[in-house]
Image: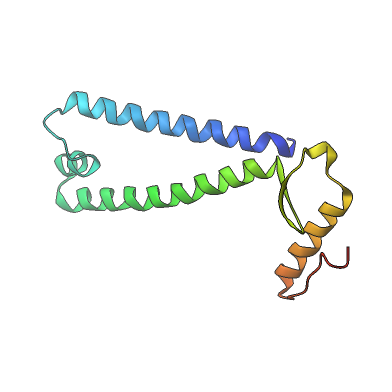
Length: 124
């Protein structure tokens, strides 16, 4: 699979997951209209206090991680259209990227990974 198809596929999977979650809450609200405290109330009514709290806490942690995942997905999607050059972010179409930009990116990444603090782009 080409690298450019990964982001749209990930967006589709994330969108389908959000839609399924919305359908679950829609069904729960239709079956139990007396419960109005969200996931905690549904889990507490079905399984008790402890599992109600545990499910609400787990849902909260999952939402925090999902926020981070969405931000990373947005950054990687924008990275398909923008490239970091040595002078800052510059919007450049992929077909017009000079070879020096990609070499500069590789040199910067490898120097960061190895722990060296050198200006790898100055030599380019």
